[in-house]
Image (cartoon, rainbow, N blue to C red; front, side, top):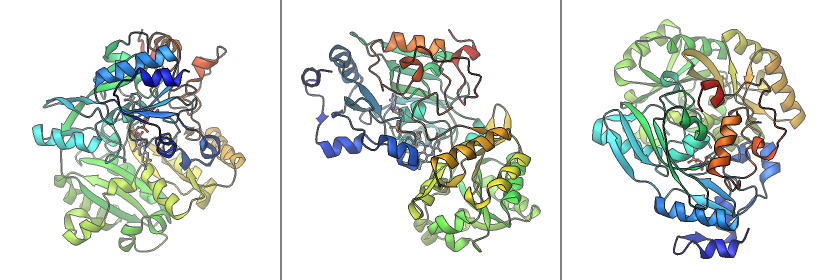
Length: 467
Ligand code: FAD
C-alpha cells in the first residue's frame, strides 16, 4: 500500500487521520463477543475517508486499486461481528454522507446507502404512507447500505421474512474496485451476490426496497409465569392471521426485571417472563382479548400510557433483537449471546431444560421460508470459550441451528454461504482483493470447501440458480 499517494489522489474528499478518531471509526459492536473482543481490540485503519457523492466513491476506489489501499466500508458501525473492522489497515470508507432519497413510489423506495433507516421511513411515510417491511432494532442509527451488507432481518420479520428472501431487496447500485470502477445495477438473484457480503465484493451506493403500509405501532408487554408459556403464547399469536403484529419476542425471566431498567416498574416480579409485541392500532384490542384467553398478564400498552410515561420509555423494539443483549451487557458485562434457530417449541423446551439460567432464553418469532420459527438470540452467562463451544455443540446435536456470532468471517459465522459464483463475482468486482480484506475465507484459501454441507442463513447463489 502506498498511503501517501492514495491520499494525494483523493483531492478534496474529506480525510480524517487523527489516531483516536480513526480508531473509533475502526470499531463496530464486535465487543458483544468476548472472543471477537480479544481478537480484534487492536485493529485500526490508517485513515477515514468520507465521500459526499457517488463520483467521489469512484475516485476513492480507483485510487485504492492503483495504490493497493485496503478499503473497509462502514455505515453506522453497529454490526456485531467485527464486519466493519479493517483487518489490514488502510482506509475506512465512511458512507454516511451518501444519504439522499432518490425516488419514492407507493410500494417502493430507492435511496443512497448512507441514509439512516428511521430517516428513510420518515420520508416515505410523509410521501406515500409507506414504511420499510422490516428493520433492525438499530433503526435509529443503522444505515440502509450497512443493513443490507451486514444485517439479516428484524422488527417486521414475523410478517415479511428476512433480507435473504427474494423480493425484500429490489435493486442495488454497486461500485467495483478496479482501475476504472464500474457502476453495476444489480437486480433479481444478482442482488444476493452483494447482500450480506460485508462489502467484500462491491460498495453499495444505492438500494431499492419495497414498502408496506405504515402504522403508529402500539408497544405491548405481556407477562407469563414461565418462558415456555410465553413461547407457546408467542407461537399462537404469530399464527393469528387476523392480528397485524410487527414484532413478537418472548424473553425469559429474570432478563426483563434485571435488565429492562425503564420498563421494570411494569414487571410484577423477577420470575416473570415477558413477550414484547408491536401491534397495529386496530389489532390492539383483539390482542388484549387473545392475551386474556391465554391467561397472560397485560403489563404495558403504549396506547394506554400517559404522555409522561411515554416520554420516559424507549420504544419496545429497543428491548428486542440485539438490544436485549445490549441491555443485559450494560448491567452485566460478562454476558454474551448466541444466534440460534429452533424448529419447534419442543426443541426450545429441551434447550431451556439443558441450560437453565446459564442461558436465559430470548426468542424472536420470525417467518422463515413461509414457516413460523423460533429464532433465538439467547443470552449466555459466559464462562469460557470451551464452554461456549460446548453449548453450540449441544444445540447442534439436538437438531437446533447455530449461526455463530463469535466469528468475523462470512463463512464461519454461518450466515452466508460463499459459492463459486460469488467468488467469481469478487474476482470481477475486486480483482486485487482490496475490499474488506480477511472477511471471505474462500478468497484467501484456495482449498476452501464449497461443499461442506453446513447450513447457512443466506444460501449460496448456485442453490438459487443464479449465474
Ligand atoms: P455497519 O456496521 O457499518 O456495516 C455492516 C457491514 O456492512 C460491514 O461489513 C461493512 O463493511 C458493510 N457495509 C456498510 N455499508 C456498506 C455499503 N454501503 N456497501 C457495502 N458494504 C457496506 N441486525 C439485524 O439484522 N437485525 C437486528 O434487529 C439487529 N439488531 C441489532 C441491535 C444492536 C443493539 C446492535 C448493536 C446490532 C444489531 N444488529 C441487527 C446488527 C446491525 O445493527 C445491523 O446489521 C445494521 O443494519 C448494520 O448497519 P450499519 O449501518 O451500522 O452497518
